[in-house]
Image (cartoon, rainbow, N blue to C red):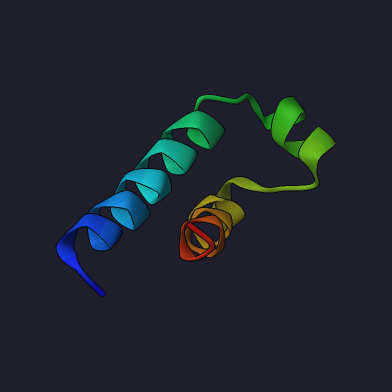
Length: 49
């Protein structure tokens, strides 16, 4: 994997974590997530970039 692709994946992970962490618990619940799952979801999402 080249540097640009690695950066895109890292940036996607970071952005997803930041956005999900900004949600309150009720909004996360509406999405079917808990705070403990945020990094897992972000990692999976970044892997698709």
